[in-house]
Image 1: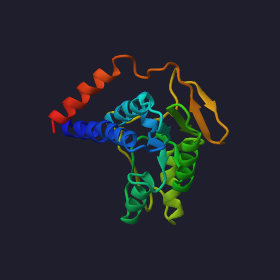
Image 2: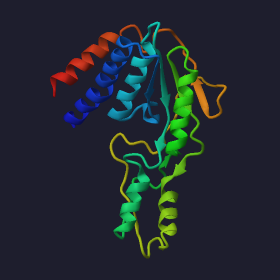
Image 3: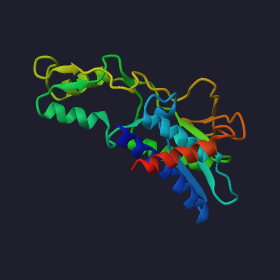
Image 4: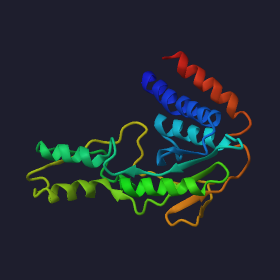
Length: 221
């Protein structure tokens, strides 16, 4: 677990910091950090490190590069997406494994996500955090049922569904906005903007805490 946590901090936090520094050094005009709904009230190391990345980007400032973050949920067909996993489980005769009977997730297609991220990059003005409108959350149990039936099979007769139980840190329902965040509309449909409540996201001790976190992560490799 420690190695996973160290790798997450190294890849997400240190990696983002390095790319931010490179963008500044070489005069990039636009920098967009891809965030996730897991950064909202994070309950896992993935979400926590992504939230830190949002703060790293939000605090960066120079006269050449315009920084922004875009927060959204699951992308259909991407690495780790549940649909390819279900397809493989169905192809081998099941069972289809669902984490929680009530679990819901937001989904968006790859073309839609790419288009909206590119549009968000043109809207950025002051280290903004944008939130994509993901529509209505999808119940994973319903998705499993539908995929089995679309494969021409009958649930519980041809293919069984097993409920495995949520893993540590895994939320039953993801969120795109949390308490205290003021989401406002933009000129582009399906792209919202989080209002900044102060000029120093993360607080005055953020840089010191970040340096300590990065040092501990690199030390444990």
